[in-house]
Length: 230
Image (cartoon, rainbow, N blue to C red; front, side, top):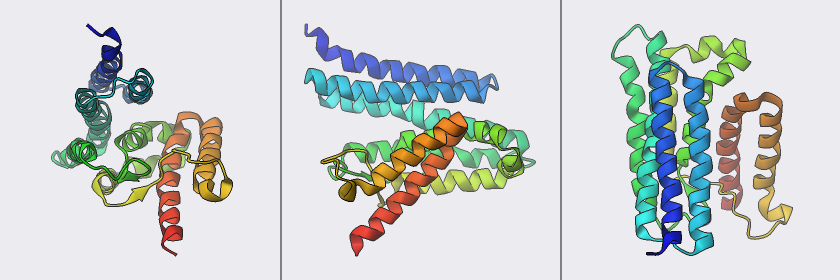
């Protein structure tokens, strides 16, 4: 029995466990703790792939298991956070259910990613971890910037966010991947700007700085696409 072949899959299962625990916290009404488990899942999601490459045990089982875990951690968990946020302020009982488009389209994106060979150097569509981080940190943004509270307590706006970002998940839109072939500024200018401004936003505003970073990521990706088409 090759023990090392099970190490990446074990890390992936910890990712899944983290997502499940986060869901429990959300059901308890603690969205911020639920968000922390998304952070933990994102860290584990990085390390399972890193471990698989390091140990040279990449395989189809790990690929499929990773996507199944991500559906929970980066689809169901952020979807429930937004569902509960919307439910607290919606006057129409059915309205929060529209936010469940997030786990549906997250699952679709992950299945599509598994059979798409074009995403080795850049992402096609918004990655599910980025989408999950955006929605899970909206409560932090509301606490850090009180003037945004009225907007983030508008149920229809939350539904619009859910649908726009869900469409971005499956859109045929090339987005920046932080993979460097070289470290020259000219060929990586948008990556360096994203890393610099993103780090500054998080250092200044903490977790509340993550939603602006995700919006910056999308915006810079659009600019990079426009530049490449010239």
